[in-house]
Amino acid sequence: MAIVGVLAFVIALLLSVMIHEAGHYLTAKKFGMKVTEFFLGFGQKIWSAQRGETEFGVKVIPAGGYCRIVGMSAREELSPADSDRAFIKASVGRRLIVLGAGSFLHFVIGFILLLLLFSTAGVTSVTSTVEKVSECIPQTATEACSAKSTPSPAKNVGILAGDKITKVDGISYKEWADVVKKIRASAGKQLEVTIERNGMPINILVTPAGRDVDGKVIGVLGVVNKVGTVTYGAGEATVKASKFTGEILQNSITSLISLPAKIPDLVKQTFGGQKRDAQGLVGVVGVARVSGETANTKALTTREKIATFILIIASLNLFVGMFNMLPLLPLDGGHMAVALADGLRNFLASRRGLPKPAPFDVERLTPITMAVFVLMAGLSILLLAADIFNPIRMNF
Image 1 (spheres, one colour):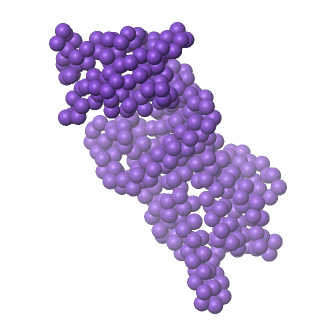
Image 2 (image 1 turned 180 degrees about the horizontal axis):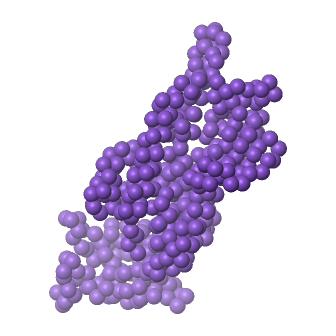
Image 3 (image 1 turned 90 degrees about the horizontal axis):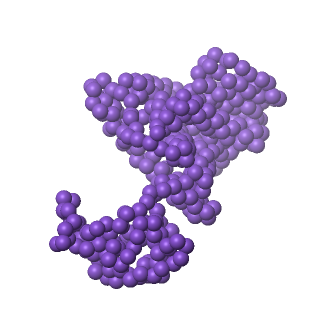
């Protein structure tokens, strides 16, 4: 089963790359630019086919892909027929759309996958169904139930295992976490709890007992609820997918900002024998390994494995989309920064009554591009070594 998880990850990754490049291809064609190549992978060509003016194909190293648009550089020699269709001749707005289309589609993929996760595969969550009723409310972690213990409110009022708590004070809560918040804020205050037992609603008055937690008294009902897979309707799934997409993007930004500080720790973990940080940096090989372990574990149901895999691919797409927007050449974000610089130069020239300046020669930034490329390649090699010699292990 592990190989199935790894293959599924590789296929999902290649599809994501293809969709990314399709974003560049389709928007470039929409604006009349000439696209001569659309390839998955790098290195030696293993297959290609000519379709119109574009060669589509696959290369031997499945480490990305590219879409070659005519006239990406001001120095590129163009035939008279291609001159007006060059990327560099397009307006700044169109250039930005073409450059940003790849990352935008990564965001779309991530959102759609999260929507599928919440609406079909479901997420593991504490449900509103009671699994166990406590005998008492212990005030410390070591207290055993005795005659002196605080009685369990749930047991006193007759709540049973298998009961489903549907309302509190007449209000329906979609998430059990919201019910917990209500109970914790109601120590010593009587609540009307509606439970469903054998398909019939029963209203019960119960007063949560108080428990001291770090100097604060919280209300406790005395129940342990079942953990299960929860799915949502289209509307709520959309809201949750949107919120979770935003959270992952925010975490991606935080991770990118802290990335330089994590590299020394990664070196120590790779070559110094330190335990690998599960929250630290991980490469493509590491993610593939996690996908394989997820598929192979017996600790998860098939549905939970699918949900975990969807979450992995969604998170990866959102992170890659954000990473690719960094204003560094050779990333798309770096080319977008150059386009924005052209737009600013055009605006300033117009304000001063001067002719439109020639597009910025991006090849002048080749030393910076090469420096960034070397750093990215070095980090990739370090991550590969870490994922091979000291891989992250999932605690299933």
